[in-house]
Image (cartoon, rainbow, N blue to C red; front, side):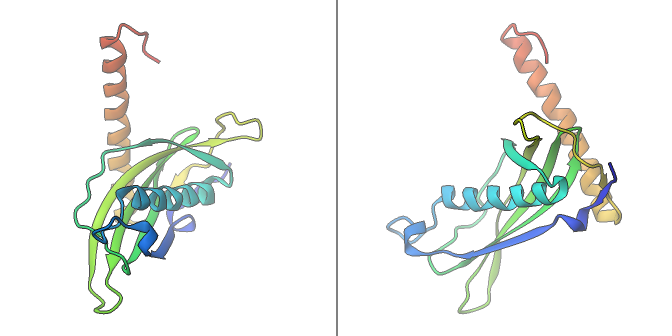
Amino acid sequence: MDAKRVGDSQVTVSQVMMPEDTNPSGNVHGGVVLRILDEAGAVAAMRHSRLRVVTARLDEMSFVRPVYVGNLLTCKASVNDVGSSSLEVGVRVEAEDLTTGDTWHVASAYLIFVALNAEGQPTTVPRLLAETPAEQRRMWEAQRRRERRRQADAELAESRGEAAK
């Protein structure tokens, strides 16, 4: 299976926030942002693997600034690293006031997807080719996050008296 370049799977998804996306104060619900973020991440993972994927994990996410009705919400997703069947996708969320052109960072998150074969079982994904220094840095950082997640999961299993996976 040939390696695929980071740039081959990057995706940008934009959507104008409508009244049905907001609370009575005109702030976009966090769940709406999360849905669009997850969809953008899944598209990047599917572009890389050319397989169906499921969301396995969403690392910590904080909302930096709000999004309002009428704003353009944009999610930029890129595969940072891959395992045997998993893919870490980084997603940056930005908002734009379409009347002024002002843009701001809303949130960022790392999502873990698992690629599935036709039987719905995890399956191998292509390796990732990080070509630029920024892509190589993101890959290295993703590998460190994977190690921390594995350690945290093992510690949790141990504290529950479960066998480590």
